[in-house]
Amino acid sequence: MTDRHLPTFSGYTSSESIITFFEDFELFVASKAFTAPQRLYLFEAALRGPARAAYDQGVNGGGNAWGGNDENVQYTNRKAQMIALYHNANAQQEVKDQINALYQELEEDPLTFYTRIRHLLPLAGYADAVRDQVAETVFMNGLHKEIALAIRSSPTVLNLTNKVDYAHRYWTARHPNTSVILPDKFRSRPGDRRIETIVPRREEPEMDQLTKQFAEMKLMIADLQR
Image 1 (cartoon, one colour):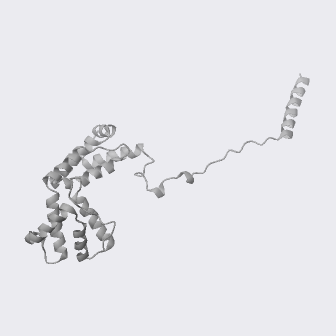
Image 2 (cartoon, one colour; image 1 turned 135 degrees about the horizontal axis):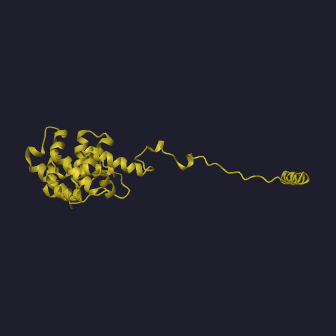
Image 3 (cartoon, rainbow, N blue to C red; image 1 turned 135 degrees about the vertical axis):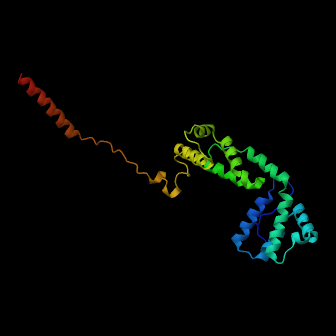
């Protein structure tokens, strides 16, 4: 039942995120359409090193907090206990520090930048009531200076949603070839353009000679009429 694409979690370093592990693990389980007993079995198989030791200790001596009447309840309870163990206050503070250091990448559109911020807010443990405020502060501080100045120069007061929309429209207007404008199927490709070939004028010596002689005759007639 094991699979080489099964995500694993060991808990050796703080760079491992238990939240990311569960996101990847549950996506993997859903893609395989595993049953609840299979999911629980794979969950245990995916834990390595210190994480597996902590899990076994909890299951064997943790009481009802780690148990349950069936595999669904057991998985839910054990998942919550592992998150509480590895996504503690220190881990949340590290995510907060990461959020405060976020900035818009050189070729990153503002909407993608804002999405990155929103993804990290719950991982940092911010309460729902303050997430918008934190998101707005980080978004404005991390935007490209030109875009941030344009937003602050708006003649009307903009809320968070307005600021994100304004920044994204400002960006897309100046980056018309990026995928944030239109899906690929609507964007022009080099092979779709018609290239008009300029055909050089073909030389016709006889016609050119006649034209030259006709011009000379007109000059002679004009001289005789003077």
